[in-house]
Length: 174
Image (tube, rainbow, N blue to C red):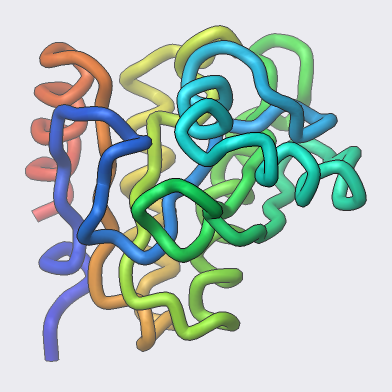
C-alpha cells in the first residue's frame, strides 16, 4: 500500500497547464467569478463556459468547495475552493484545512484519481506562506487515507521560493 506521503508531489509551474491531472483546484472568490491570480488564470484558460457554470453555485463560504467541468482546460474538472482571508475569516487554520479536506472529499466522491492544488489563501488573501504550506500538506496527508480513488495530489507552486517551501515542509512530515 502506498502511503499518503508517497501520493503527494510538489512542482513549480502553471496551475492552468497540468494536462496529466484529472482535476485542478481553483483559489476561488466567494462569487466564483474570474479575478486575478489562480482564478483569473483558470477562467481565462477554461473559457467563458466556466464562468457560466459557476454562477448557479455561488456564493460559497470560506472552507467550502464545489465542482464544475473544466471546459477548455486540459483537465476534466475544476474544484473551486474559497480559502480564508488571513486576519478576517476565523478560525483561519480550520477554514484553510477545510478547503483541502473538502476538495479531496469531492475528488473521492467523483472517483477523481489526481488533483492539483495551488497554495490556497497564501497570495492576495494574505495567509503566511509557511503556515499555509504546513496546513495544506498536513491536511492532505491526514485526509488521503479516506480517499482511495485519489492516487496523486500535486501542489503546483507559482515560483521557486514557494516550491522550495512546500518541498521542505513535505520532507518534514517523513
